[in-house]
Length: 323
Image (cartoon, rainbow, N blue to C red; front, side, top):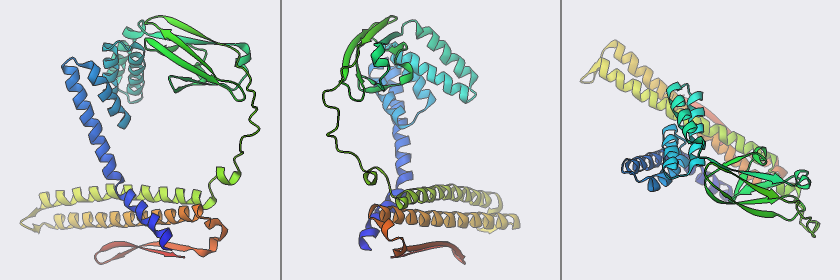
């Protein structure tokens, strides 16, 4: 029992810190953005670009992406600039910001003539294979393999692989405003047909029923805990507003008394929702642990329950786990 409860306690502590971690990430993204804007104001685009890239990796903000596109344009990375201007225009369109969409599309049009491209020409035999293509280590979508791919000027390395065949590696140099081509020959069959590879068994490749159920139940619990934070925040705001509008020196009008009581009731609901979420999350963790430790073999060895309740001081959840 102790061995099962330890990961449960650790996971609950981790879930409690999730919202704090998210706030820290958002603050970091904002600080990186502000540093990048200072660098742009000083004309230092070389140092601004990496900061905007890191900021966007944390939080995909439209404004940061627009300035990253501008940063790429100023440093001669025209394909990256054009791609990001287009993404900003699409995002602005989806959010109904017509002026921002129009401006981003104009900037994309202005830089389009400077964009270099590379086109892969596949041997007919290679086209029949289930190939996978990477460029500088990043996967190239199958939809654009034989289409012109917008790339920044410079040398780019493509690797083409297919099951049962030797990989092909080729390099192509792209120039601004021009299209380069890279011929992909027929891939050579491998001498080793892969018969000596160790097959993956069904037990290793799949999760148990209890584990899958635990993940789903735990996810619902986390959603409930997150919702309770919003409820509590709303209750606090209503309570403060009631004190400010209807109460003086601790004395409240009948309307103030009613408003503060309503806020307390809302806060109690938030407490109950949080407790239910925590309880459901705990149940999910127990299911995951049992699934990972072979609990499917003896499903009758564990029982749990989570029941919300109210008393005179507020709300609580009674969680019971029996092994």
